[in-house]
Length: 110
Length: 119
Image 1 (cartoon, chains in turn brown, red):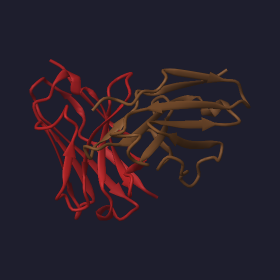
Image 2 (cartoon, chains in turn red, orange):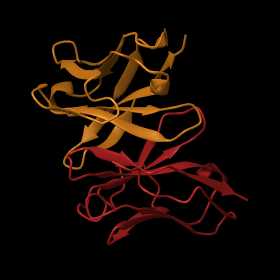
Image 3 (tube, chains in turn brown, cyan):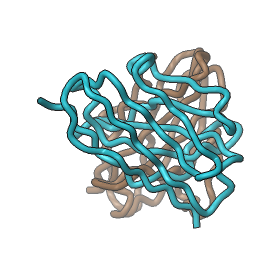
Image 4 (cartoon, chains in turn orange, blue):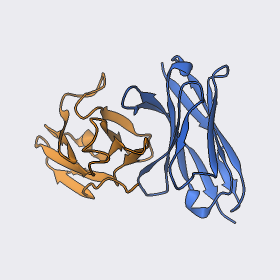
């Protein structure tokens, strides 16, 4: 199972919005509404930010939102804050009954 | 409070074995599928394995199939990962994570345990 495709890096200024894409195939992202997004700060465990494409767990800021179109899912962060600087990973269930992560995207807040 | 605490990591020679444990607390362990995810130094997350609520169904990434075995003891609220025939490329931080039904998004993670395969 190949990793989902994410941009290696994105950046934005405080207050701006950014979007991170996650491209897979019809066997994973496109085939199921089981895409999730994780935030990981250096040296820390990942944190679930979005599940089932667009649902936010309790406690996650509503500045984080998710969507999907075809084989590509997206994470949008609005009103960027310094604390949002982290690595972000998407993940999807696959037709092989396994899960696959994206390669990760480093978000820099300028 | 949900807690997942991994242990058992360390340095092992190529071809060797190691068993990781993940002690769970703060939730009904026997009601959740559980996962192992690993992260090589400086690299991204990689899904490793999943086990269902009673251990009757397991599945693995191709990279570890036949070498790793996931299991659980619901009486001890503990998840395990038996790793055999270890290779240098298995060097990583190993995280256990709880699955959130039905998508199995990982809503709680342990702090991770480092496995280093080196001679």
